[in-house]
Image (tube, rainbow, N blue to C red):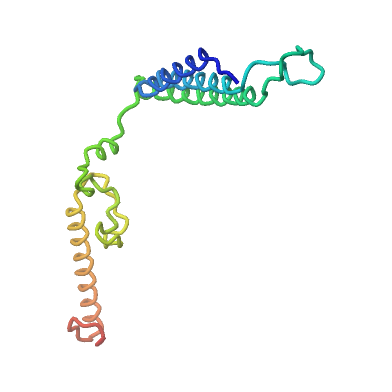
Length: 195
C-alpha cells in the first residue's frame, strides 16, 4: 500500500493549526481549533483507509482492475463528523452564555490554578489548603472536622479558632455542670462521679 504524501502533509498541517488554536484564550478560537483538528484527523483516517476503489456494495458496477474500498474508515469519518458537530454546538452554547455574562470572549484564569502554580516545588504545603480537616503529617482527622478554608486563612489561625471554640464549649459545659450540681445539692469537686 502506498500512502498519498500530500494527504498526509495536509492532515499534519491541519492538526498542527488546530492544536495551535486550541491553546488560545478565546472561546471562538478554541472552537475553530477543534474543528480544524477534527478535519485533520479525518484526513488521517481517510489516508489510513487505503487506496480508493470500487464501492463495497453488491450489484454495483465496478471496474475489473480496482479492489473494493475499505468501508471502515468512511464509517469512522462519518461518526467523527457527527461527534465534532455536537461538540461544536456545545462550545457555541458555552461561548454564547459566556458572552451574556461577561461580554468577553476569553477564558479567565482559575484562581485555584494560579495558587497551585505559585506553590513552591520544594515545600508541598506552601499553597493554601482548602481541606484543613486532616493533619498533614499523619493524615488523621483533627478537631477541625470538615473545616474548609474559603477565606485563605492560614492553618495556624484556623487551628487557633478551633481551639478557642473547644475551650469555650468546655467552659460552658463546666458552667452547666456547676449550675446543675448547685441545683441538686451535690458537691462539685471538678471530678465526674469518681471515674
